[in-house]
Image (spheres, protein in one colour):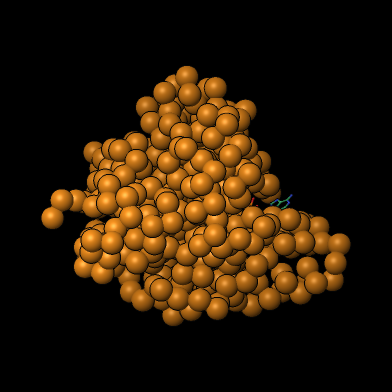
Length: 334
Ligand code: NAD
């Protein structure tokens, strides 16, 4: 058992977080992460409206009695969501943890805080992490450049971003971007994080509600098989390489790109179709460089058991008595 400020804050056994995954972080996956001792967030925008989210929260509660939370992403969208309605449902359903991402969550914080909800804000730079702390977020999830989805525009990798964020903040931090195994967990703790977030790794698990082809693609592709799209719109997304991605990059290379030019290829609804029917050439799939570390499709429990065993073996065996203090706190008595 590795006890950290993140396990304490969420009331979970393991400092491993499954952050929001558009269309994928539904009750099946998030409850499996929770039952395996981690902290999972279901992605609100995966559901067409707030009532559908309410149904999924109730379904997840039937599948686990452990803590879980909801991810609310504030990024540009083709179909603007009714955020206040999603937040109202989270409060009514007694959700205790929300992961915000994309833009500054400040407008929603008073409402969330007065409902007693703890907010972990996912961001991609030290300055945004500092802002999150200043406005009252309870923790920060800091995304390095290796990450899937939207890693920001600064291109700073986790090896640099995590310790810099640790130095700048007092609140707990979760390291995200490039993490997929027990070595990553130990590294995250050594860099000063209180836990690690995994996204892509949690897509290639048995309980993820996506087509088997998608999971196999994550196993078969390696660390070189991601591309950055939408950089021209300053809304960069790291995705798995496929012919659709090449088309998007070709359109962007012409200059003066507008979202309308690429919407037929990048639309989330097309991506949703890929996850369902398994045609991995059609649409774009968020994926991180950690694809190179993904070699199998375990259950969440198998994955988290393995990560913890690896991490504890490294901490006890390889580092032995040379443990720095922050890690020593996290290590159980022998
Ligand atoms: P969507 O179909 O609304 O948009 C497709 C992509 O185009 C998204 O990456 C979106 O950010 C981008 N986009 C849309 N309008 C844009 C604009 N005017 N300028 C620049 N970029 C624009 O997206 P979706 O797949 O239905 O997802 C809904 C939202 O959730 C999006 O904002 C998406 O970025 C975000 N998201 C969330 C997660 C998560 O894990 N929570 C993961 C990936 C994406």
